[in-house]
Image: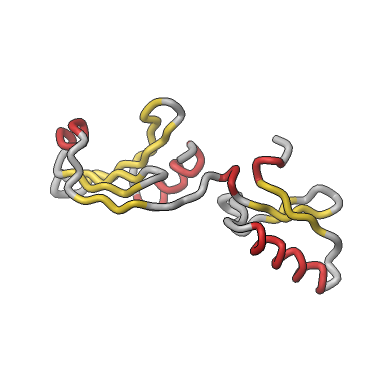
Length: 124
């Protein structure tokens, strides 16, 4: 999970975003009973305590499949404006076909000409 996503998720769940090393961000939520819920880009894990977290002993794990931003597709108009599936998070569509379907819908309403590109191909 990238820093921006971690910070936004932390704000939503009332947790803390932090970098665990190597550019990997986690979100942690300490519950009233002292247990810890940890969100990563791959999983949500519950630990009985900070010590259990430090030891890597998750009591429960739920695996996730959240694609990285660079693996998503966005719609771009002829002026270079970018259209996301989620504007607030600046995240495109998971599948190219879905983004192309949306682009065709925009074109059919006479809103211009559009192309679909990988989000990683956008200029930074």
